[in-house]
Image 1 (cartoon, one colour):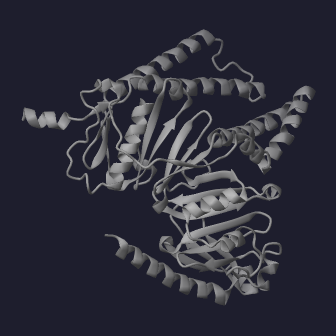
Image 2: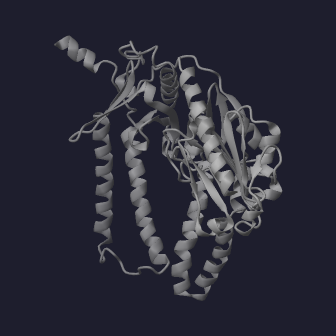
Image 3: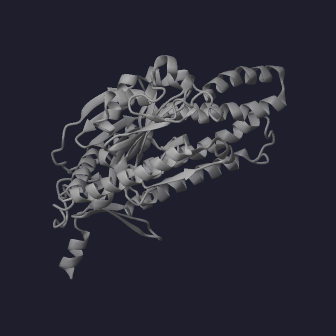
Length: 477
């Protein structure tokens, strides 16, 4: 019995001892931010009364007690938090009163990412996020580990996920037990040899700032700031109360996107892409190429003179569609050559003329089947760009004359398709074909095709997708 208990406890490691301090520090920042937000509301005229009723001293003591309790609770949580890399899965135990035991099998791992929030970077720590096939709620997070340990854990998990069948008989992976104290967070972990990462591109921060300025929210912000300052100078309380929160909201959104996309680097490491980005929260995100379900290249009108493009993807298991889901952005802003290069990494084998035609082409050129003149009344500017090209392994879609969009969907990744027709479309004899991919920001669609062409695409693409899926199944050993 004693031997069985020893085996049960073997290999468990604590997170880094500074983890409770960081967790408490993050919560403390949230409390302080809330207090400051209340003061900003008062500044903009939302509430000029003292919410404490003259008891500011007691309020300060209460805030201090709350902060101490937060740090103390985080420390207790750390004492009962342990993780272990086993033979077939990674485990995390947390909780004091309500205990939780989370497991992610290696064959269910979608990606393993490393994040470095600002406070963690100051003390050399990182967090490891294990993304599983169950979606966000099934992810496992190790916060925090020493940065070398976090990187070693990531590399080890990636290799174990790739070769899960080969390690299934191993009981517990050696992660340095005995070489370092348990409180050190597994500093003795050694990663197995992996393919060296090759840098594909680096996006200059100046370009990211410029790309943000060439957007509608940035223009609104630039117009709202002078109006807010003028209202403050004239004492127009009503305008200040309206413009203040609006300006802060838009400015905060722009700042959030800047801090998220700054220092952007794209690396290729074997069969996956590694995205490194972030200003205050430096993150390294892994995008397995075989899990990319759809690709979208987008060019807003203000970016046209500079030839810039943005690339987002649908990744199986990520399931996010919001802009802040950084797992889906593989190029925040890049030149046409950079965009075509990244597209070649994501979907090798697309002919160059088809790729260029998807980005900039007009009319039935380079193999594209386009909408007829019937669509002109519904889309007078962009109807000549509406269309698709069927390649041996994927479908290429394009639309938009002012704001250009090109999409690439592998035949085997199309979940389902549908043809829809609104009242105006019925009058014009056209229909829209929608391709259903996995959840994500890319929604493949071909608008305003002639009804006959829309149904022909539906039938032919059903056959292509079925054949591609059968071929993929036969290719599995």
